[in-house]
Image (cartoon, rainbow, N blue to C red; front, side, top):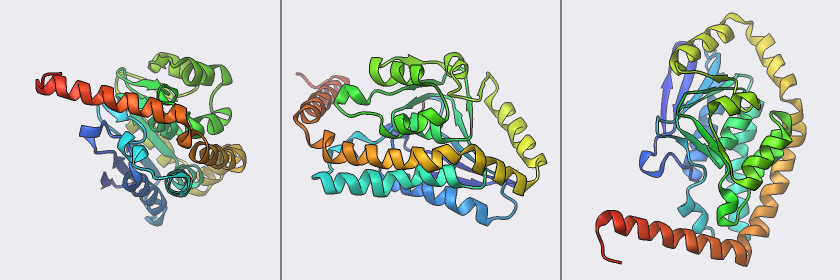
Length: 259
């Protein structure tokens, strides 16, 4: 993770390109700490989260999920480790701006849905593939009533559709769908910078009141259910094993290893 301190904002760049910027516990913790630290610098007016042109964030690292040994370990990872990052984003007095130029999948899309302002480039893609491996999009389903629509959530979570920036804008999943993401980011930061800091913080707190009062507790309940029931079930075990076998086969094929 790369953290850059600018004159009036901090930029957090997810930097695990070999893993398509997927998140493990260290990454979730690093993002939370960066968000929580940003208001401590008086000049900061916003937090910007970015990935790269190929992938904004592919969600939770499958290897991290595979290594969880039992329900208590899963709760420690998801409820105690991951969820506080989303809560910090929602509760921060600074606007959290997410710039998506590539794929935002699973937990990556959950970062998007909890962010205050989202700028999507032409290569942005949004999807929730969790059900393919027997899991489900907990934080997204808890937070989406505060930010987007139930119909869109059903398409992404139940059907498995992946949508581009224009549809994401149509359904209020993103704030801007543009070709020039950096120019738009500059304009958004200028607008935030022109506003009074206390008024901005109060506006955000009121905007996020449903997300904080309902969405985060609902997300905790959903993550607990995922950890104690779904991830311990036969369906998830079988789906995960099939996914890992298919991934290994693809890696062998790329390496030229005979089947």
